[in-house]
Image 1 (spheres, rainbow, N blue to C red):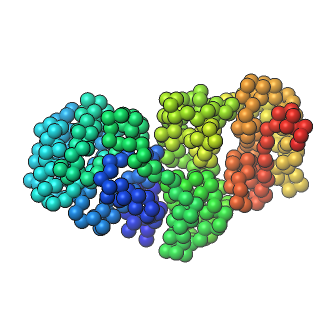
Image 2: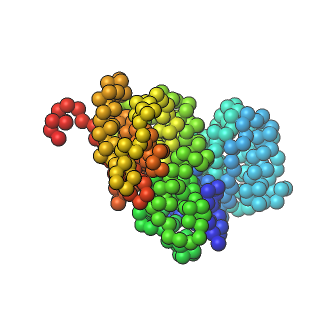
Image 3: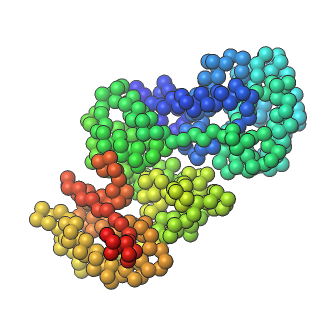
Length: 450
């Protein structure tokens, strides 16, 4: 039986998968036109799987092409001689050609010479895919390799190098911006996250094969919390069916909320951990984006570019934002010390949560909101009047407030959570009772108008 893939690339025989048909057709068209191009995608977004599917399509539809995938991820600061030897070995493994087919590379120019000989002998044209190019840290070797590709570009048909496809994160932008480069910005493919329909189709594959069903709000919740980020989609789905509902029962919202809580607070998920790690390298601007004033999105700003290409932030109507709720919640938890010291003001040591429960013993949101109003009257000038009064500050301050009481009442708080086809600012879940809180920020004039 197949399962959800949390460690790429995807083998369709073992895992449920999204075929990416249109994206593969776009890649085939560029190769057909002898184009050299780049691919941009943050880590864990499915680009290696895309290459795998593209190579399979080439082998199936274009038998006179010779595709090969090589990764520079582990190269580091290697010397030229090792690079040449390793590149030859990887080309041989990737094409499954006999070892004597590709002779040793003795220098950079030798690569073009040997590739031309193979192309003529095999009567095929090379399609070379270089993955994780930023893994090659020796700049002299990297620049030499890129210079070789540039020099080949204008005689690519004579050499038989139909296409070179480069992918990476940090270095791709510089390669594109180099005016001497054959890699034109117009010839960049961006591997997007899964669409809502693709997420639904992925889950439907599982339902058809196993008979276990996801409630519709759960499907919508998986998409809303991940925005289709492939690694997260598969990780949430796998956790739901293997840990939360392992006996084939219908996957409902209670299980979904628990999974979201575990991913943002308990599990060490590689996707989320990578995002948090990158965000910690630029703490101040992350606090601004999470809790402060609007930060303009400008890819010429090196900090903004770093956070963008690593999948931490995106452009939301001209401002830097964290669009994926799972990431946002995890980052909020990471940077939550901004509110350290407030807990004693949320609830005094002699104050019991039972003061704010209803006749069923559940937290009464109305009573808690009156308690929160009292807190704001006492602390608002300190927390909200430091030039950082964005809506995000209120979102996370009130979440911290409600979470303080929730932990005593066996309840859970969720920020920016999908409910009924929309998304709410704060969801309080306890013993079958659901409370929804919406938060809006108004200046004095807006408040009067409202």
